[in-house]
Image (cartoon, rainbow, N blue to C red; front, side, top):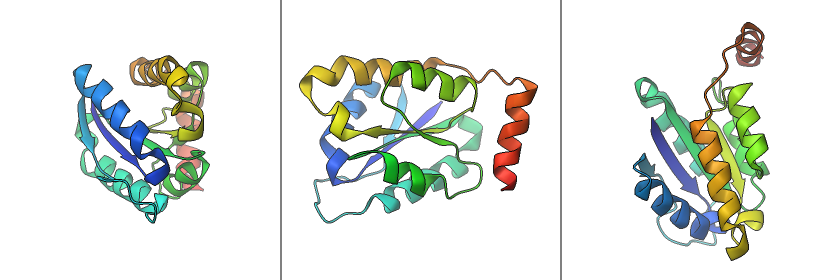
Length: 151
């Protein structure tokens, strides 16, 4: 598995923590920016880079974790691309089902929820569950994902 990690200014500091956590966990993770805090950057650019990285690395089971203030904008931007199944996630249970049922290849984390010190255990569990949950590949799930790509 190859993981691409990106964030705008609002998610920058959380991204740094997630990057360190994933590296320490032995994951193959690439930081795709922002590389410094820039209050004028725009989240759609990081979503675009994540999608291009996923497409260029399909043989490595690529996934991305994208972070912005509320995660909604990042998810909307990523889901504009065919083959991308991005989900906004702030609970471990949601992370489980978005992988199991929908084969999500991107999760979008809301910095406003997770950048507090007391939320560290929760974002770690959420990320861990998402990375470790396999796609169930039930025929109905596969069929639905194909239908999404045909929209």
